[in-house]
Image 1 (cartoon, protein in one colour):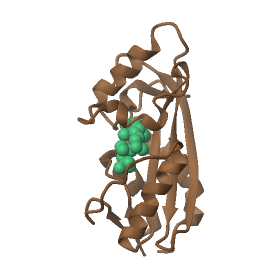
Image 2 (cartoon, protein in one colour):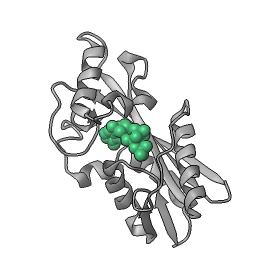
Image 3 (cartoon, rainbow, N blue to C red):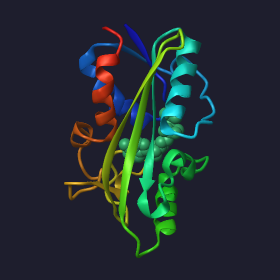
Length: 192
Ligand code: ITT
């Protein structure tokens, strides 16, 4: 069957396409279908994933998978959280977003943070299923490496010494918040 990837973020497309690969679905991207990006008015990751997936499923007539994710920093009371993309500004500049996080944290607080990834699959009839994955780690400064996307260069996952910006794509995809969410979503995917 066909599945719409309801995201306009190229970094997510790479990771989700890799995770979906073995499942044998025919993936179409929201961008290729010319689907509009709905405004993210939700107050939780799951609410935003649901509204993006539903908008794409309704507009396309196909099942749609959306991802809403972000970085939650303990010293900032969970910010930027659902506002992680918005902290990069209209230019989507994550060097600026990372510097904003670093400046807001100050020197002395805890360095701990986690990524959350909410995934929703929605069907054209309005049915949805949502799951959430989390990965804990700590923030480093200055950012390290140029792989990955978003906040990857400043995040070191628990158990690793290198940042998500320094490890290979395969190593990041093997275990992170998105892979953990996806593992729960697998039994809910449409058949190939
Ligand atoms: P879509 O809504 O089109 O999917 P978006 O980039 O606006 O794209 P979000 O609203 O979910 O998506 O924003 C999440 C932001 O959190 C994203 O832009 C990244 O900067 C960051 N983020 C999420 N997952 C990440 C990861 O695995 N590594 C680094 N940063 C991540």
